[in-house]
Image (tube, rainbow, N blue to C red; front, side):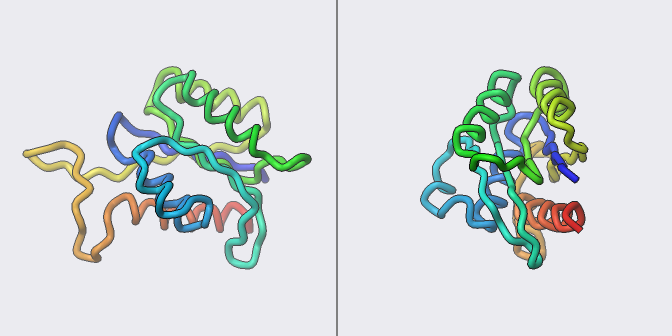
Length: 155
């Protein structure tokens, strides 16, 4: 089953950070690339729980053009003959970026699971990626949860 995980949220709420953490954990980017404050679009065959799948990640999600651009970059790097088993795609909570991602999923016959970023709401600021008691940031926790969702998708 081909699955698209849409990571939706408002501007500056951790979508790109979460996807980059996911890419770092799964070996799609290195620490140097992770540290650059830019979007990523990566695809690679990965093994999770002894199961191999072709995974695509794109943090290009601010608007319809950005989502399309991310898909173009993925297509350029895609191995011939492979469909993506799982795509993790950033989008805004509504509008052009979400519509574009949903249309891509429909056109390419992906099941869609829509996720939202985790946010701590505090009086001094709305978005806060503060450390929790576990020592993990909200983005790290979400990246780990996405890996668990991917495991369930490939079973």
